[in-house]
Image (cartoon, rainbow, N blue to C red; front, side):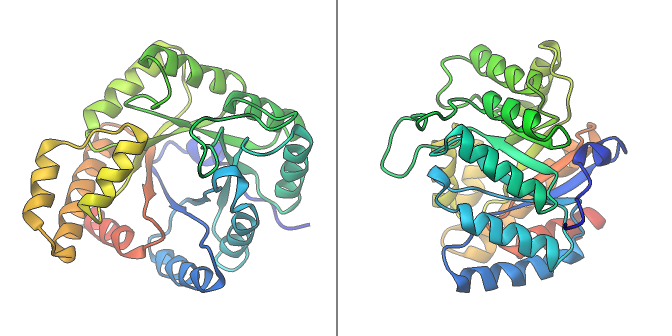
Length: 293
């Protein structure tokens, strides 16, 4: 049986800022090779853990397992695979949980998941689950030693009717046994601070890790923010527009903004930060160098 990862609760208990990075499974073997090169380069950053996303409808299920094993076995990372409710019955989810556990993983990012491509609304599979809190309950019942992360939205989940309803949904996930929250990307730290304050007032006491994405393209980030309900500050938009079609300048603007965010977050006691790097090492390496300065 593979050596089991440490549960992230042990790392959070050290009361130091944790640094984590998210990967997504490539579509083909060439992409996996490119990801391996990125993973090798990021050893210099020494993240405390990395996560691997799970495609809509479980579309990347095998690749998620492949990439998770690669990052754990070949590079020695503590890996947190994502798992969603989409397209799976309770029985299938239990089988997947057993396999994840048997492979030595002890940390899972627990999500409802997005509807499969072409669908506009989430529909539970036959004998499946409708909400992430139900998946938290299932996983904790199956393997109580799993450490489970869940998603939080500083600026509200796009499907939530009100911020209050969104917060109630998050509390249900934590009350079901979630150990920490990782937020959706945001570009205004005040949104994160206000979100943490609302969570604390609601009785959500677990660590709330801010999710940061260094901008690589104005069009790309506009597409992302429109999908996840995140606002793009006017100052950042103007800087990116001024950079025009020069990708190096756009990246420099994006890294500078993210660096300013992270420094401020750490200054104000955030439990670390989670980087959405789109499988590219450059921005994570630049941020690490900037923070070391």
